[in-house]
Each structure stands twice: as structure tokens, then as C-alpha cells.
Image (cartoon, rainbow, N blue to C red; front, side, top):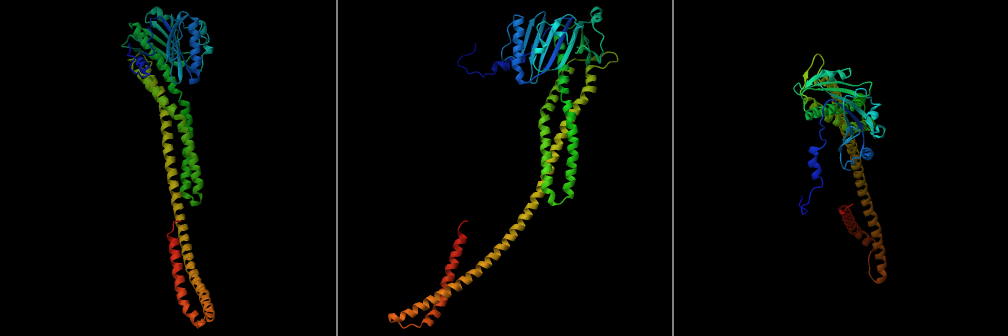
Length: 424
């Protein structure tokens, strides 16, 4: 019981139960397991839960909880295991007996009530696993199908045969012969084999994208080389044009990186799970056929290296484009700075001319004001005769000239200094 006074984190129980999620199904041979993997999106979740609810009602069972990401339902003589992942959903069906004659087209007849056509998403992986005891009678019931790998697993207590290709019945086929494995060990081994096939395909989902990225990067590298050559040979007149083309190339490269980064990261994660599952098989070779580890190392690893190299190439290209853009922008900035210096020098020269012109105008202004001022003083001296003052107008006018000129020059100088000190 939880103390009602304690405030619990809403994800406490969910995260604690995560370690017990996707429970193991115990397998007792002979057994047939079909695993269907659908690529799904978040919008498909409601349709999946509707399908599970109808399935549960058809077999008189309780539907999974609304927040559940996995469920185990039994009915119609078989077991259905549902697992929802980030970008795909697995439906695993377990049925006693070896049903090698069932095809993908006739699976609904063998598993009544599943209604495959109502499952949302796109079918991406379909695997059939036949689990049989390693004795002569059971082995004789296994179909003769093309086998790419064969090895003993779990210290020789099991034998795995896998084709890693879609056969005529619509499934990729895996055969597991059990010799001394418990039901729990057989269930764990079967789950590992199904996950190996599922995650192998999910990792390969990035291969077409990697090929497209390689083609894009090859063209972009040639375009960048040409632009770099143009930057070296062209003059400053084309810098703006070249910078615009480089920025456009950088935008296209970043769009490619953004569109493929998640897919390549997911491929790395899926491939890591594949290697982990293979390591857990504890394989030993049988005859001339390679083990699963050897086969995937020769066939799957090169595809994953193609994805890794595509990711690395476009990341390197992004850095090269960015450096080229920075270099050209630096040259444009230096040219713009030199042009700005020329403009400032021209402005300084013009300001010097304006200053000298202003000084000349000030001199003319002093002369003009002095002339009119002395004339005014001479006129006033003439009018003084009527007031009884005997003044010589010409003498008074001549004497006022230096006084008026000095006063005018001082006042104009103070006014100019005041204007220079005022903020613009």
C-alpha cells in the first residue's frame, strides 16, 4: 500500500514495470510461430487498439489497457502477442504443431479472427519460425527450403536453419530444432531469432536512403569543387553571386542531413541489437554452411557500412561547405571594409573642403557685417549733428571697422564651437 500523503511521480509504476514488459512465451515443440511487422505511425495507434479490442471480444477476453504497449491474447487455439514500438508494430502468433503449408495469403484461415486486412500500417517483415524436436520423425515433417545458414546454438542443444529471404509462401523461413532446451530456453531463443530478423530488416530500411545520399553527395561535392575553383579564379565582382550559390548549396546539404539523420541513427541502433542477438546465440558451425554471425557479417555489415559512410560523407560535406562559405564571406567582408575605407577617405576629403569653404564664408561674413555695421555707425554719426554732437561721420565709421570686425569674428567663432559641441 502506498501512503496517500506521499506524492508519487506519475511514471513511477510504468517505468518500474518496463523491465517486465514483453513477457516471454514458453515454447514446447512442435510449434509454429508467425511474426508480422508493420511500419506504423502515431496516427495508427487508435486503429491498432480497436483491432485488439475486436480480437479480444471475439475470443471473450479483456482488451489491453489503453496505455499498454504490449499484450498477450489467447483464443481460437493460438496465442497472439502484440508489441508496439516507436516506428513499427509486431504481431506474433503462436500455434501448436508444424503448419508448413500455411502461406501469407492463407494465414487468416489458420488463425481465425485475426483479420489481417484491418491491421494498420504497411507490412514490412513476415517471418515463419518452425520449432521442432531434434528427432527423426519431427525433422522429416520440416519442409525442404533454401537455407543460407545452419549452426548449433546454446551449447549444441539447438540447431538453427535460416534462409534470410522471402520464400514463395510469403515468409522468410527459420527452423529451430530443439534438443534438450527447456520451454523457457526455447521461448527465449525463438524470441531472439524473430527479433534478429525484424531488426535486420529495420536496419536495412536506411539502405535506399543511403544510396540516394551517396548520389546527392557526389553531385554536391562536384558542385562545391567548381564553386571553390570559381572563387579562386574570379574577381570580386562575382563574389555576391558565388556566395549566393554557396549558401543555396549549404541549404540543400543541411536539408539532406536533417532528412536522413534520424534514419541513419535508427539503423545504427537496430544493427547494434542485431549484433547483440547474434552474440547471444552462442553459435557453432555445422557442415559447410556459414553461421548466422558469419552470414550477416558478410552480407549485412557492408550495407550498414554504406549507411555509415553516407552519413559521414554528408556530415563532412556540410563542414566543407560551411568553411567555404565562411572564407568567401570573409573575402566579401574584407572587400566591403576596403570600400568603406575609400568612402570614408572621400568623406573626410569632402569634409575638409567644406571646412575650408566654411572658413572662407565666415571671412566673407565678417567683411560683409563689418561693412554694413560701419556704414550704420557712420549714418548714426551724421544724425548726431542734430542732437548738438559735433562728430565726423567718416572718422567714426573708420574707427568702428576694427571693433565691429573683432566682435563679429569672436561671436561667429563661439557660435561654431557651440554647434560642434552639440550632439548630432
